[in-house]
Length: 223
Image 1 (cartoon, rainbow, N blue to C red):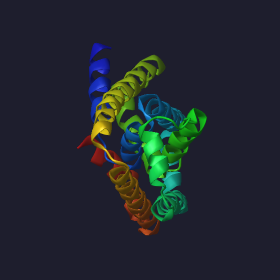
Image 2 (tube, rainbow, N blue to C red):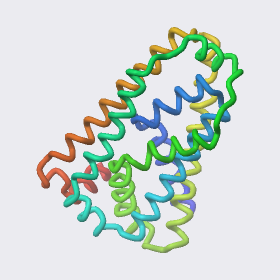
Image 3 (cartoon, helix red, strand yellow):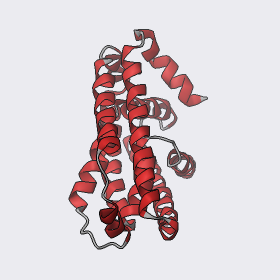
Image 4 (spheres, helix red, strand yellow):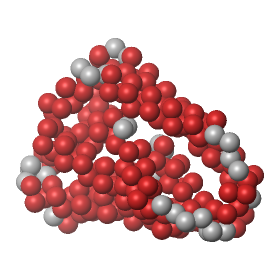
């Protein structure tokens, strides 16, 4: 059990540094809206992860096989990410509104941030495939015991969340050096990245079926 906790905590720590749309959005939220806002956003992300892990545990191998036959899900999720990124790029940003954000004079809608974090993670079908791979690899080593499974992934998510909390606090320290102009550029860069991540998902949806080979996914995670 101690070994399970150690491995889960280590994995959770490194997962927190995986580069993706959530990573950049979390940092941007911390800088522009504050620590509490970023934590709320991250809670939405974590809830989506928990749902994915539950689906992965209940469905396991069969779901990965089904996803390989439904590449349209990648196109759908990628399209949403790209559209959202384009909206950020095209939307005109008011410098005065940005300054109000910096001064924390704009009321933060925490429910909206929670939903945004949840949806941003949930529409990324690649995250579900990733968790499926983790479950398939970790299952045998946990001897498929429900109790050990729950403890392993609870520790993993907790370590992931606590590492994100440190990132949020450190990102907040950058606020003193930011100007409205820099924040606008940061938002535009974030929008461009979301478009790129979305396009990557869309491309995956058009790749040959062999590109979704379950065994390749699992072997990639093992390495």
